[in-house]
View (cartoon, rainbow, N blue to C red):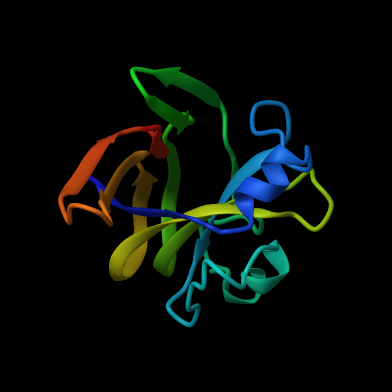
Length: 154
């Protein structure tokens, strides 16, 4: 099932000025609890999210390093993707999965997956299958697909 995914607003400036290099930097995905309220316009650094990071059995602080990272462009669509991730035997209350650059100064935020509700996990294998779900602001239509994020160039 595709889950809503969102970019943080500062991502594009940081990517275009060379602060973030998605394919060569260490990019991580961390699990965040329900106390966190995302604000894509004002939050841009890991330090604004890290106080809400989950802890518990099966979880390592800082999250999982993404592998298989790719940037592709085809038929007017730019896609950001990585291999899916799994936390085996996870015990935690999880609401969001936040993607950030662990290499760049300030550890800039890239985006997040909204799980739709807080999941109370007790020694469960928990995975994020990167696929996106978003609403087109112009048409109101819902768009979904494979990959972490996708931007349509028109």
